[in-house]
Image (cartoon, rainbow, N blue to C red; front, side, top):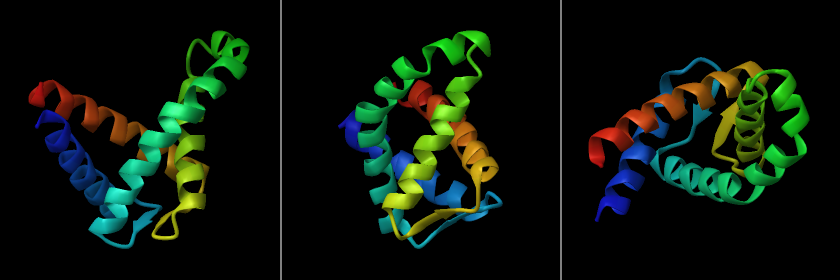
Length: 111
């Protein structure tokens, strides 16, 4: 039950963020649900590979390169989904940071 609640809340948060953040656009709530699924798959499959490949850069930047990896995953989700668009790298970076913070808060409240 907690998984379904977190999934629905994350979809709602994603829809609101993509609607109100500058530089991000989403077609509707069904696109937000698809975006959450695509981001989950990309985070599970691609993010560990990117973390391993970018480990030296992550060490040199004291962990800030992980923000770049998150933004790249959002840009890849933009490329995969026709109903979700971000205008550029900075918009993807802002979207990924705000989504991470709000999702972490929701996870603390729901758990």
